[in-house]
Image (cartoon, rainbow, N blue to C red):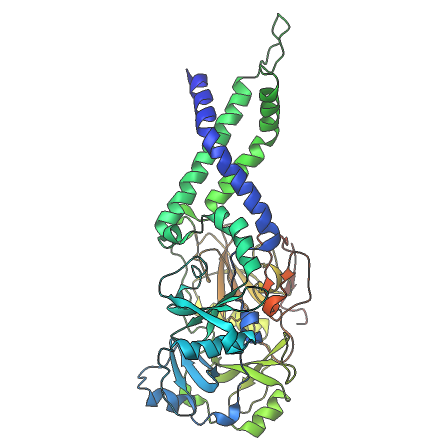
Length: 501
């Protein structure tokens, strides 16, 4: 009876599920070489960001915030160019730095000008395709930029641009080739359909239960491989495998690849973290443990253009972030190396008081701050990582930054909440210097990662030379990051504190 149930389940449930297996295999192969859904990376955004004219900045950050009616300091403040004018972006609000007026939702014509500046195509060659208020097929991962004006650029690549009404910035750029590859790879593989993906619990449930059915088919096939095999040689000379023809090949291939298929489907099930199994609330890090307190806009003086030109060495300033590090104000400057722009960018961390570059913090200092913020956590070891290790690693130029300070605790602290997203990405190319990262280890230890503040020079988050698995698109210089599993992490990389930095 049990064997009959196995045969019935494996046969009649496996027939429709096998089509899904083929779809997953084929789309997964496409994703290995093309990446995920189209996305505007931070490097691409900086490539197309207009230069910042510091001579037009009339207001200090504090004056702009006060004039706009801000009563509390923002969590994030950036100075950049918006619709051809310098502007402060305080969290979700944009205040122009020349007049103090607030940016209102941009209309179609203003958004067309933004799209023309981004793509380098005349405005009359850009067609309006509508106002996107709900996530469509391509804005599922950039919902914070909606509502957005959608434009079709009249170029050979078939580029489509989405310009946010709220920020007057391009939040997404896709090409015809990228959209086609997404339909062949990420969309069928992850069921990335707007009607399903908008409802995240439903989307996760569909992936979990379809993967669970796939695991069931693989398990029943393995059990049949064991139960149907004639372990004792029949006296009448019949073969040990009771199948012939195509069924015999199905039996043999299933016995050989069954374990791999089961682990493959099961790992896909776990990739969406069903039932929040990795989001258990754990250790909390004080929000200002490394910055020394919240951002104080009054600490940033008026712009002195000659002093800025000397400090930046004639580089073209694209964006200036306002940061607080160790209780002192700093400018986090993103600049290109020449007035002509280009894809290469540099990151400068300048003191707001003297415009002198800041040197990276020593590992011992960061470890001491972490210890003061978490006095009840015993320390097993502290190391400075110059390379990725088995848990802190990335893919291509979009990986988390280096170097970092790793602090491991002694004893079992349970499961700790990842510090940067549900998928365990503990840093980003534009993560503020000194930011903390908490990661979960396979062993019962807590690992804390802190990035030292940077200084002048190329950083790992800047565009890197081409490498296997990274494809550069001709249209708009687009770049796709490596898919999961393309670059195995390094097993080492730890440098003890007494070693020279």
